[in-house]
Length: 260
Image 1: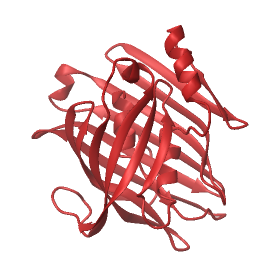
Image 2: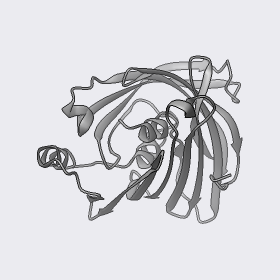
Image 3: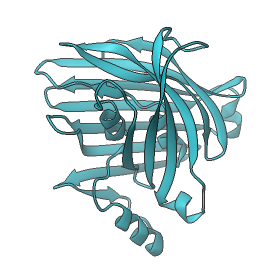
């Protein structure tokens, strides 16, 4: 899994409840630490209006980590809400690394997904296209679906496509607990174990094994009419052999400019 999708999924936001006519939104920020050093900051803003959710995210390296890899990414997604499970509409991610910029766009029409740019490796493309058959969603829609399982983000499972990789995320309930440490949330949390498993794409072709990490969710924001926004407030573990710790640093009950 690439760094941008790793951050979006590890720090994904979760909306619970049914849509209403008025707009509502929230903006959250996170730090991602490796050892004693914060290496990445993530800011996510979501706006819910009627039966549509619009999300924006910004990811960037900070501090000494920029010496080794100056990386930034922005992502934008549209998800259709309704009485059934959230359905993907579009997803776009722009990755900036050093002097290189790569833009990947996904769109769903009639339930089928198309993507650009195409996969150059013919064999990998064939395996990827086969994996895309059935119900596959983008990273934002995946976490929206997780949050719509009663009042508990776990257990749930989603097959996700980020334009390069198809992988499965499986959440297992680990019971209730209490947040502690550096998270801006202090209170009761729902603890989950998350399993990431590659299905098709570069990671699968290279034999990268699946990984597991722990996430604590909490109803951080109230979107009105009894609806709550479930967010990861603390997470730790390993993805692709890289140990990390992520935690909520700020929450604002309104959609904000992620470029700030």
